[in-house]
Length: 284
Length: 273
Image (cartoon, rainbow over all chains, first blue to last red; front, side):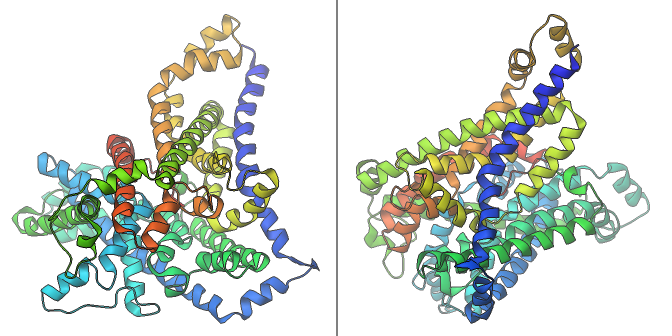
């Protein structure tokens, strides 16, 4: 067997797609960093402009509150859905199973469109509340705590199935003998959950938290479609606003570089926190 | 978690209800708004059930030039992105399956590619595309290249397992006959991995079909369906917006339900930007 020829072929097979991704995604990102550091000549003026902007700090605040809230909601509901579906058989289980995955199958922009109709002032939710005598609520009023709540719920709605799938895969790796042993020892449902299910799930949950955390920080469409750039500001929509409306491309790039750095820091902390290789274990 | 007994039944029922409501409500409302006149969607209190039916919203998707061309452009971009990302992703997966060092590097690369926020790539990329003549292109080829690059981690991970499963002895026999590496790959590996390759084609098609952020920033006048739906929703054309959303929804739901066993086997689709 001609190993050298095979090696050359395999390296070519790996290098061509890698170059493609580097050229299309990484090279522009690097160029963005370079451009953000220039104004006339080399300068940090774009960054000082961002850091002096009060609106930027509101966007940072939103970029922390919304992902944190969304992660909390999607992990609680994702865990409940996964525990409910795990090991279940029958036709009803199949329906619940498809229903649990469906919100992820709905294209994000489609779900956001419907969410607008549900949460708008004269929308379906307020109509239902009105009919029940609970009165309308300001679900999407810019800057109100309710608008943050709405954005968090809608964001979690779309991605909870992903968390559920990761947890479901984690549940499958727990050996049934452990449950059998716990049952023989007379452990109840809650004790079994607390001392067997939860510790055994921890690696999968941590991996899911890092992966979902990275995605959650990138939040863009949910806030843009539901509340516009000013309702619930986040860094991506702030940069988008500087780019399109304010015609400040360099400052916009500086803001988006700050977001990228935030994400890399979170990813590094996450990777250090978990056992090395646990992230890759998800893919295999 | 097994057990729970009779006490868990009401809890299970509540969770089932939550799942069904979360899935059924948006789809029902879209269908209702798509088949009724705008008057019913803007009524207060809103109609929960359709009163008058109309086909005009759905027809408009195929008759109004703006909607029809967005549909066509979305299909062209998604087909091109799926073809490119499946070819490149399959090559990467094969290399990763055959060499341990390439596997490690590949997995690291796939993870790093997930870190970049859309906005940090899209803004400088716009400048590059303007220079290359691919910004807002009527054929959507700039956007197709971006979608292809975004989907490569997904297509590589989808096909990787299939290549690992092919025994090395089969390739060795072909080697002894003097076949070239490319010929071995095309004649022995690709046919056996065809189901995984088909899955990666439809998955990458849907990733492009659904993608909103890059499409919004790059196809500013020659719009694909996601940015067009955004404008229709924001500027208040409920009927056509709902019909357009329904057309977007159908293939996406069909594909995810068809690929459900794969998604449940522990493989998690790449993020939607």
